[in-house]
Image (cartoon, rainbow, N blue to C red; front, side):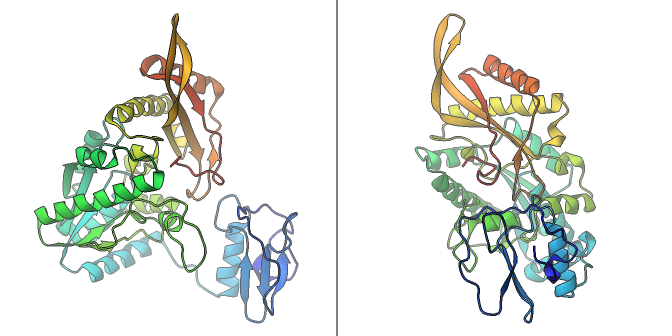
Amino acid sequence: MKDGSSLFDGIPKSSQVWMSHGDSIKSLPEGFEIIGSTDSLEVAAIENKSDKMYGIQFHAEVHHTEEGKNILQNFISDICKLKGDWTTESFIGSSIELIRNQVGDKKVILGISGGVDSTVAAVLLDRAIGKNLHAVFVNNGLLRKNEYETVIEMLTKLNINLHPVDASDLFLDRLTGVTDPEKKRKIIGTTFIDVFEKSAEEIGDIEFLAQGTLYPDVIESVSFKGPSATIKSHHNVGGLKDKMKLKLVEPLRELFKDEVRVLGRTLGLSDEFIGRHPFPGPGLAVRISGDLTVERCDLLREVDAVFIEELHNHNIYNDIWQAFAVLLPINAVGVMGDERTYENVVALRAVSSVDGMTADWSRIDYDILAHISNRIIRNVRGVNRVTYDISSKPPATIEWE
């Protein structure tokens, strides 16, 4: 990094940054100069000092950029002269005001899953509009083992106006024969909206649909004013229908996962909610490569239950950001007793992360992995091979599809 730039004031001349792009800058705009380079890239940061304009090729916002927060602090405080007076409490107050201004005295239907994002959104909305909030928890047939009953019990404790809906047959019927991940996500997103709109009609006089959409969901689903590619359509962003009967309310849309957890604790949620690993809205659909059938879903549910239970048994669940199992679209030869088998292969995935934008694979002890693998193969009929995913994000995503 070049000395004398306000952007890098107090930053070591050499530090680690996270850069996953394949593009590069060949010529600078008029008035700009290079203030940062890497071993393989000449133009990693540029500055127009007179106009106070800056550009960086790397991701300053992610955990893996060692000085990222300090660089952003320099830009916000020293260059833009902004005050750092944002607090979680102020966000709660302003969000409640915004929700009330947007919604008025109208009813709002919320898609809730029992996960951190939608539950925090529910508590925030409940504070803003009370019983005008109607939280709909949909069983899409793609939930984890016993998840439907467990989440209903958990959410009931919060005294949220809850409407459970079992639409598992509808989702699985629409997904029959669909193997493309993007098509799965689009179908699931559309079907969720159909279920919410039907629930809204049954409740009556509902004009708004609320969701626990976060900023990473938006980033990965759509391209903003530029050539960024869609990484994957999140069911509550890229899966939305072009013409919906309901207007959207997304109070967490500009937050990252770590900020939502802090917000949840400030709102008084217990670790029962805050400490839960993220679970995707499309559920097992993005953890089953290939056809989605009841039998394949049930098999993966059993594998996933063993994996998560053993993480708790070994007291490492809370050390991991997210863990789950994936059912692969292949079979492998094995031996059971004296017999040859040709059965399913599953992959286990566990990652560490701060905000979900980047992630590294978790270094689970080999003996623990061996125990988990043996238990899965011994107890889950139809599986004879277990693998462990050691890919980081990027280049991989956390979910497989």
